[in-house]
Structures are given as structure tokens and as C-alpha cells.
Image (cartoon, rainbow over all chains, first blue to last red; front, side):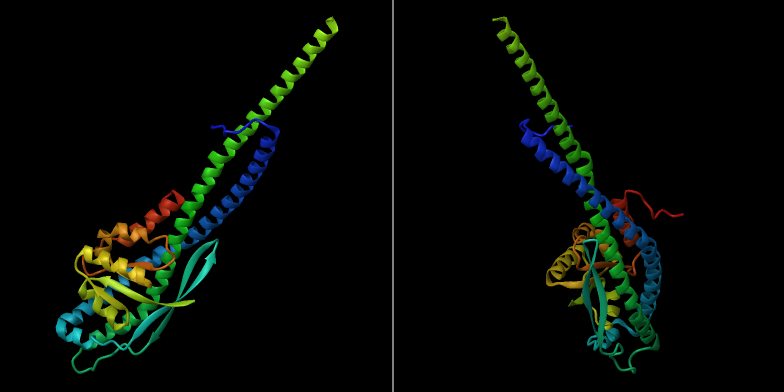
Length: 207
Length: 107
């Protein structure tokens, strides 16, 4: 392990000891944070996964029925029917602080009707597909929220792990090594000083 | 608390249904276009962006870039083309990155 480039003095020793103490405390805190993030993440994964699979299947069937309706009516017809949607959708975003990770929380805000066309030129299948999709949008938004949470958590766990490792395997050992080095050096000084004094005393006595 | 819009990027056929529910749509055909649109949308501040699977696969790098931002949430949806399980792979990768173990393995 690398020894830090410092002067072997008592003052430096004291400073380093303080630093080690702080680093250890930081390490413990970060480790706790990492554990908690991990726990949060693990509790989410299974849920997100099942939801994802379920949503994908459902959405695909809706899309298929929609495309079927589309092929029945002709593309131009549908495009015309849907060219001026009266429905508007937006989401309200609230950010929640979860272990210093800013997690967005979406609330849907809608206005207008989904069926924005006359019934004359369109088929019932299309209405069904649209109505089904309208309900489905809620789940999609929910999924958006959950997936983002998992992604953000994963990112934060990665960052935290790096910090924990840097402290645990790099900073703390090198600080401790340096402290040991300084203590050795200081006691060596002391011993050499002592022998010097004894020697001098001997010389003085001989005269 | 702020109000943001929802956008969808994908092939034209799939986009119409999103338009009906009031989502802003950006029909694209090529990957380059999609990347341009995505970058622009993120700058203008959209909350949720839906992207179809087949497009997402080819713009993987772009999507990864925006993972660590709190907004927008990019959601991959299946299109009408062949399924490629992009979203699940994506989820698995981020879990492996975080935990170091593949906890999503099939039992």
C-alpha cells in the first residue's frame, strides 16, 4: 500500500489520525446507505419484472386490434378520424427523496374525451381498442415511474459502491499505513536521541 | 411539483393510437431521426417518453446516456415488428451493474 507523502512529525500524525476517524465514519455511513439502497432495489425488481411482461403482452394485443381496425378502415380514414384529438394528457411530477436519490412520482392529468370522431366512418373495433388503451395508459405511466426508480437506484448503488470501495480498499489502508510509518519513525527518533544522550553522558564522565 | 408532457417516438402505425389518447407523437422511420428527436425532446423537458422496441435497440447508447437523469423516464414499448425483449434485457443489465449478480435469472 502507498504511504502518503508527509513529514514524519507529531502534528502530522495527529492530523492523520483524525482523518482516519472521519474516513471510517464515512465508510460506515456509506455502507449502510448501500445496504438500504440494495434492499429497496431488491424489493422492486420482481414487481417491475412481472409488470413489464404483463404490460408488454397486453399492449401488443391492443396494438394488434388497433392495427386490425386500421386495416379494415384504411389508413387515411383513421388518420383523418384521429387528426384532431380532443384528449390531452400530461403528468404532474413530484420528486420524492429516497436515500438521496431523487425519484419522480407521476400523476396523470387528462382532459377531453378519447372518442374525438364521429361514429359514422369508423368501426366498433377501433372504439374498443382506443377505450382499452385509454385505461391502459395508467398502467403504462405507473410502469414508467417504477422503471425509472429502479434505474436511478441502480445508478446510485453503483456510485455508492465505488465510494465504499475507494474508502475501504484505498484511502483507509493507506492512511493507516502512513500512521504506522510515522509512529515507527518517531519512536526511532526517540531511541536514537536516547542513545545519543547516553553516549554523550559517557563521554562527559570519562573526562 | 411541475407539469410535464408525454411523448412517443416510433413507427407511424403504432403512433396513431398514442395520438388518440393525447400523447404527443413523433413518427420516425430511421434511427438517426429518432436520436435527433430524442435529444430535442429531452432538452425541451418531457416527463415520459415512449419508444418502440425496434428503435430502442438501435439507439441503445443514447438511452443509456439519460439513465441517470431523474427526468424523463424513457419507457420501451413493444412495437408491431418482431419482439426483441429489449426492455427486459435493459432491466437485467442495470441490475447486474448495481448488484453484481443476475438476480433476474429464470428459475
